[in-house]
Image (cartoon, rainbow, N blue to C red; front, side):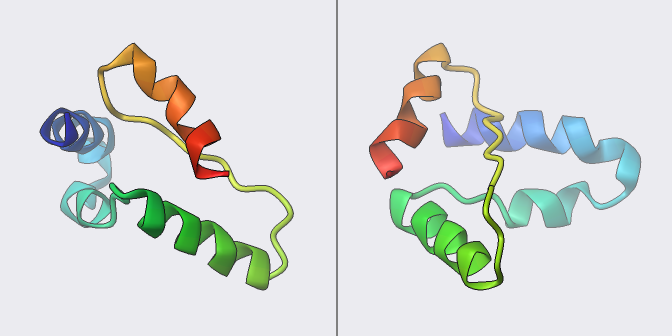
Length: 67
């Protein structure tokens, strides 16, 4: 699944010339995602948007597991 997400993300950002960097920054673990959200909150963000580049439709439920 993560490989699918990486491939989809790479294709989505290929036009920018920075796809490799975007894919390298893909957060793939609950801990990594929680830490990023906490960091943004520490900077004063009151909203964070999460994108799913995976192909499995069941992934829409995963953000709920993070909170």
